[in-house]
Image (cartoon, rainbow, N blue to C red; front, top):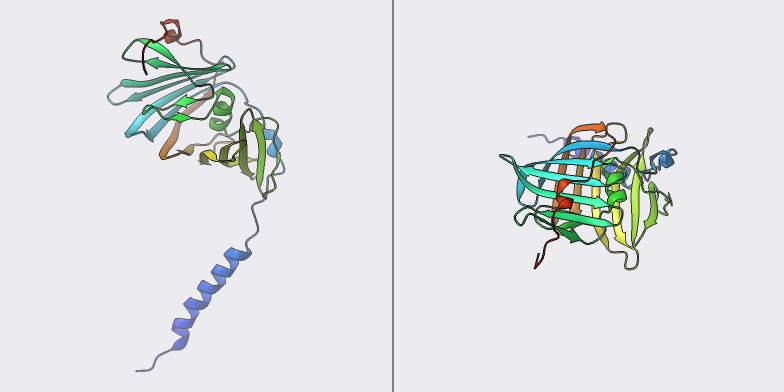
Length: 232
């Protein structure tokens, strides 16, 4: 039987070329218009389908404005599992069993399993809108922008025209340990249609269902309730 060496060499050569091209690929290019994403933008109301915290098919409504951000999550067949209010000075979590409210650490957005995302009001609004916190500058790594906000150092990968934020990281300013990582995809303008967030061992998948501009939420009714006493 006659063998044809070229039949076997050609795929190997193609693989070698592809590998070489990956090593020689240009680094990501920062969008020249990245500054257009700085700032929170206008208020909005958004509906997401979530998968996290041992739950699937959660529906989360986010209402954001200057006064604060209200996050409500509902599990089938319509059971509210989370109500969290973020404001400039801190955050409140509704205790759905005790009919009271608990103060949670400032700059924390709670999930139904008790995990806290290290996001204050401004950072949460910026991330969901695909925007950047103010005060950023070009990072040493190509394609990235970085800046500081309180005790946090943030980085964002921005590319394209119009500019779109594709990745976002939060790290402690001192030790530099990454506390939150986010991947943003399926953009509608600057707004990401899909977000993947990782905090420690928790992974959250959010798919945008509805987004519309809004003046922002009124203060939620649970803020009028008593402050919880006793343990969490």
